[in-house]
Length: 325
Image 1 (cartoon, rainbow, N blue to C red):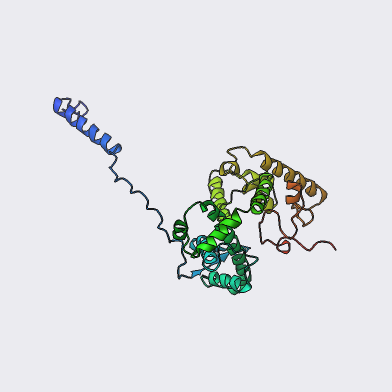
Image 2 (cartoon, rainbow, N blue to C red; image 1 turned 90 degrees about the vertical axis):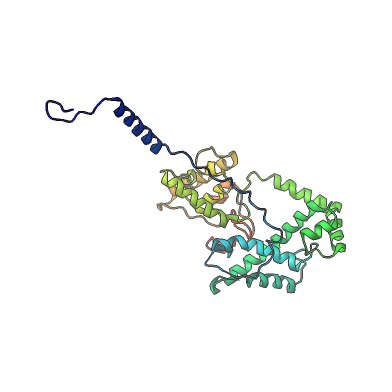
């Protein structure tokens, strides 16, 4: 049918209505597709025992931290601590102390780790120093873990740690760990540890590994147009990192309020930086060994031979100018 102006008019008959209904149903189906059935995920297999054992493989390290630990590639970073632990269990007895081990055994441990990581010559010295610290710490961690298994039969211990091949050595370790003097020393150290108001959240990868996580979080915040609170409050990089390593991701993003000890630290540090900035015409504040943002924030002096917030192996000369004579 046509109108008086010659335009085509759609028929309103029953056939046309059914056609329109079918078209509408098709459009709805296209705009709301039915979810496809996805197969159920298979449960992840447990890592087989022995996968942490030493492999004849050499990692080519492309980047290191200031402390000499591998940072890139990621496989090398993750394998570093595991390799140091496996080497410690390979050459050391469970009753050994790193300070009492002969120099030959210590050098053998360090050399075995070093041959599994290819590093450039200019970083070689710092890398070997990092290996020395890591092997010593992993030996101590092994003994700490083993003390939780002292009630198990020797057959289970030997299966868990094949390097414990001497039952007499295991009995000696159990006897030393049950000694009242050792227990009293452990309790004393534990009591000192409980007095520490701040507990870091660095994990097994340490500060170097956590920096990657921080950079990822910062990119997410930057995309959302936000800035981490400590970046607004603090200028000193070491103080920023010290605050962040004691904060949850939500606290670091400003979603949740800081814990009281962290808040007190940041406020003290901020006040010190403001006071120093008012005393000089420079826009930046230079921390010194004997007076820094960290010492102001924590209200305590630097450790002898160490640097606050940087952990073991960080030397003063790497962070500060020579002190006054």
